[in-house]
Structure formats: structure tokens, C-alpha cells
Image (cartoon, rainbow, N blue to C red; front, side):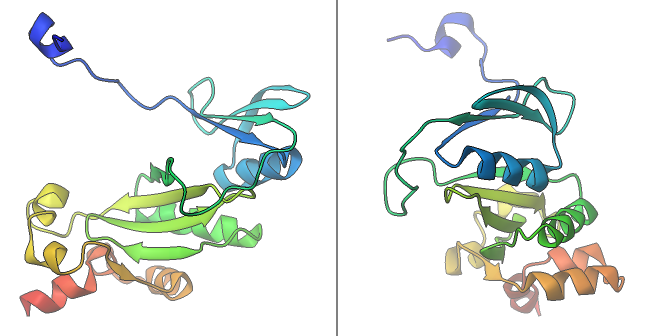
Length: 188
């Protein structure tokens, strides 16, 4: 079979990720969760189907009611999580604070090295990651994947989100907050 690159001489790939769709038996609960979590506006709604957006795209999230679905379970094949990059560290911190005030708390907070990430689960257990890119490693994220730090620990270093936010609000530098602790100690 001939690939698109071979036939046209250029690489063809998506321009951007447009949206994702959630199917749920917990429609009202899931709809409210995604509205709060992403601070969305509703662009279309009918009984059992809603389209939401958080920017100028016509919709980023669709939520559909399907009765009697089984709960999401760990350790099954499928997509593990969906990640969203925030513009900057302040936006990540503000989203954490907004979600916490709405009763939405993360289950995992970790500095992976290339990103600082905060993970949540929706009412059905679907995992959503909010992240900010870390620009602290020389050469960036791709270089980090070839580093000794990544070879020693490919997952990252967990952190307490409340402590992290307090340090940010106290004026600690972005570089210090985003540097992975084992990267700092390895160079000292």
C-alpha cells in the first residue's frame, strides 16, 4: 500500500484536534461536570445531547446520553486519558483553583519533566489531564526523553497541588516551579 507521503510527496496530518465525545448514562451529572471543569458555553442542546465549547471552535466536547452503560473500568483497552495544554502556569493554577472551588479535585499531580500535569476523573471515570509545558530542560521536551533523568524515572515526580499553588501565589519563579526536582538535584 502506498502512503499519503509517498503518493503526494508531502506529509498530510491533522491541523488540530477538534473535539471529543462522551457517552454516558450519567448525562446530567457529566454535563454539569464538564461545564464547570472547562468553564464552557453551550452551543447546542436537546434532550440527551449537548455540544460545549471553551473557545471559538463550534464545539470541543459533545455529551450524549446512552442508558444503561457500564461504568468506566481501569485495566481495559482503550484511551487512557485526554490531555489539554494550558497557555501558561497561571492558567493551570487558576483552573485548579476554580475546579477545587467547584468540588472537582485531582487524583494525580505530577511533574513529568516535559510537562507539569494535573489529572482528574469525570463522573464516569474518564481521565482528563490539564498540563503546562515545562521549558526548563535544555533542548526542551524531546531532549528530555533522551536524558538520564527520563531513563531513571519516566513517570515523574508527584507534587501536592495546594503546596504548588501556594508557592506560585507567593511569587516563586515559574522556572523553579516547573523544574522537575530530580532534574535539579542531578545537576547539582
